[in-house]
Length: 110
Length: 116
Image (cartoon, rainbow over all chains, first blue to last red; front, side, top):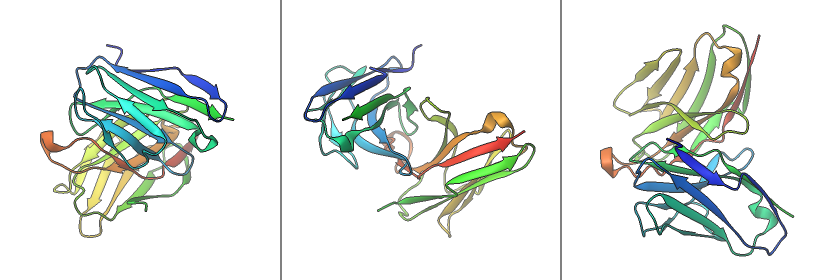
């Protein structure tokens, strides 16, 4: 069991560039989430999914899009990266209630 | 607004001492309160969780105390060890059983350093 895996581990973008962060889970979990972690602010929910083909907005969804075409994968997209999106991004999944987190993707937007 | 407030921001404790981290929440609809532990460069990992119908839950050296009327809960780490040095997050969510979608509201985090 790999649990929750994230690709890539680290990325540097220039302002205005786009990219997709990939999350995969092998626990057959229905729920998946994308959080961002910033110093002094804890983790904040960007988007989440309660099942294949569904997505919903979290606390801080602006500037991000997501897709859940397969149950095991949850993609986070940045269409036009901004310096304010410099952060560590965590994907998580759960059967219910208690998310298991991946190792994170560190993103730097210059 | 910050729905879950955590304090202190950082904490230094001697080995063998008790580490105490406090959290307060505003939304009375919250009914599940987990704590996560995060080591540098890693994702948060579930440590212990409690529901508001229980005033205390203990797992090994880790204890959650819950005060529903005050809307506060705290994590106590007994006999703190250098290996406990990490960032700790409290969190809150809503929903019972399968209705809990796991959408967590996190506190700001506490960086704990346990000195040998």
